[in-house]
Every structure is written in structure tokens, then in C-alpha cells.
Length: 149
Length: 98
Image (cartoon, rainbow over all chains, first blue to last red; front, side, top):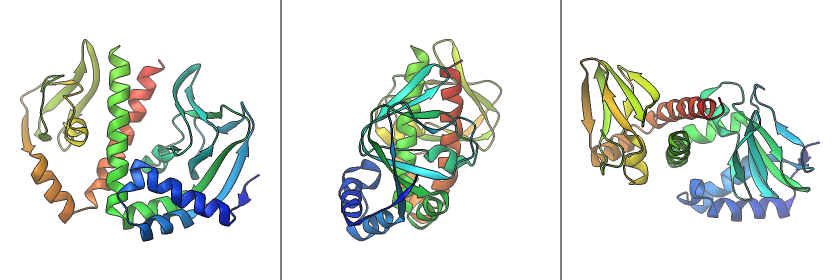
């Protein structure tokens, strides 16, 4: 079940966002605005499926506690921990989810931003859009390397 | 463009077709209106793949400095680039798990 955020969550988000490379180039005011766009939080048990490949995308996730595994079939594509986000690809290209994401630890906690807030933030904030561009390019280099191995 | 080379030029394909390769593997075929070379431009590391012309091809080379200026003037083009990068990443993830 998705829960509303409290004050502790809000200050944790702002602090975390300032350290995430994607958001680090933004000023404090923008970071607070983006922090306020995360509307819900959810807790997951180890092994619980957070997103399933092929589903329609609704939200972007920021991990605040625990960790997740990104999988396709039986293969694990990556492991992500606190401060990392996921779910952005399907929000950007408007296609179904490209992979399944599973909580890897008990008490894994994610903050959720709706697709509408995320798209609005990208359109109004060129620096954020450029941060996403750099992150996508970084991941593309990683997958290109993995493909050549 | 060769894998491992230094270089920060972004290429826009005006006409023709190119193949993006790593070893014997074709990672993508890109045609008119598409771009390549963006990875090394963003992370300033050596080229991540080879790019070979498949047919007679004309490309426009854009330097890193020009690209920065274009982005400052027209920030919305980043949204289009992001969609294309997400598409490529999705294809690469599929190829990785096949």
C-alpha cells in the first residue's frame, strides 16, 4: 500500500536528491520543488515484485532504504541501492516496462513520483533533462560493454 | 568512428545508413535524422563502439562546444534525445538477455 509522506521523508528526500548526480546541478529551490513532487512512499519485502516487465508505467521510483534488482528473464541486469532511481525509461519513451524490478532486502523503501510530475519536471527543467540524458548515456555505455564481453 | 578512440564529435546522419558495432556484433543500424557519438561526448571517455557506413552516407559533425550552445538555445531537443537513448537502452537490454 502506498503511504503519504511525512516531514522526515521530505527532509530525507531533499538531502538525498542533492547527492544524486542527476539532481546535483540543480539549485536548492528546484531540489525542494522536485522533492515535493514525490507524493507517496511504499515498503517492500525481500523478493516482492515492484514493477513487472510489460506493465504500463505510472510512476518513477527513488530508493531510500534497502536495494532492488533489475531483471529480465532469469538474468539480473543491475542492482540499485539508496539514492538510485528506476522506472524512468518507460516514462521517457512511453512504452511498457522494459524489465522486472524486485526488492532485494526486507524493508526496502521507495518514494514514488507520478508520470505526470516527472514529465512536467523534465519539460520545465532543462538541467534535469540533461542529467537524465547523461545518465541514459552512461547506462548505454555499460550495456554496450556488457554486450561486447 | 572506432571503438577506443578519443573523440567528442557528435554526428547527425543527413543521408544514408550506418551500423554501430562492437566486435562482430551489430548493436544498432541508424539512418537519416538519427545521431551517434553522444556517449563519449557526455562522459569524455573513449568511443564505446565502432560506427561503419553501410551505404553512401553523409554526416554532419557537431563539436562538443557547438552542441553545448545548441542545447542552451534549444533545451527541448534534450527530450527527443532522451527518448532515443531510452529506445536504444531498451534494445540493448533485450539483446543482453536473449
